[in-house]
Length: 142
Length: 142
DNA sequence: CCCCTTTTCTTGAACAAGTCAAGAAAGCCG
DNA sequence: CGGCTTTCTTGACTTGTTCAAGAAAAGGGG
Image (cartoon, rainbow over all chains, first blue to last red; front, side, top):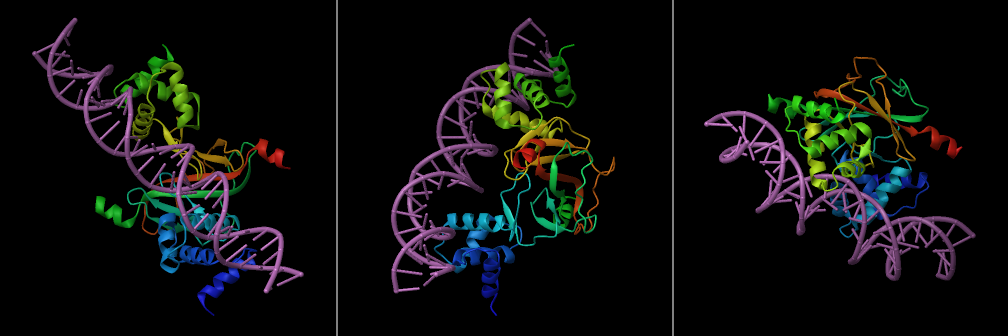
């Protein structure tokens, strides 16, 4: 069974219509984790040279809404997307070059959802971003 | 001693030139925690009607660089600023109305800086955003 | 107290990411 | 296969932010 068939099934299972742009966008996000929208557009156009940027934006929005991809956006960065969803993992972001790495939740399966004082908020997710320098940049600066 | 004199001293202690825009910007950030740039510009212009938006952007950038204010920018929001710095507190953000509340670090004085697997990153800060609904929106939606 | 150097502010244009809107095309159900 | 609904294309537009050049102001030395 081809990878495309697999992607189509994922879309169908989520109750979405199967369109060529959506299949390509989902495939691109899986191939390029943490890619920004421009990179995703470029990757999609390798398969479908004529897709509009709007179709990619729409697809990303729809896929995000259905929980098939996750949108992340550290301060000062444009929107990025990843297909690893449902496990509440976190991210390390390099202050120098902006590269992003996945980090498993430090507190095991039950995520760090307990705020000390929640001010009455109903919290459903705790997002953690670890800021620092990636291996390459930290050795380059020393 | 006036509040303005106090602000001037803070700027001087940070090694910055004291200018009217900077004093007004620092005062606005202290008065309006979590305000976006537009609100800060509006607040500053109540004192100094003629300041350019660029002066406010420059001042915010400079103050952020010196650690006198902190810039926060949850996904999908514009840049916001606060003057509570140096205590590694976190934020709760309402998914519905976007309001932001301060949340003390859940793990006491030593912040949650330990990533499970840091991939060789040199981490200097862990930023936590608690996503959910604020009291007003959670009661309105139920 | 005034001058000089450096920094900061004003003005105005430019930019990038993302959004809006109208009509054409394509997916899916019966 | 036909029709209804969703999605895609096209192209303009908004918003938040940055860039650049010259004018103004801060602060130290004489």
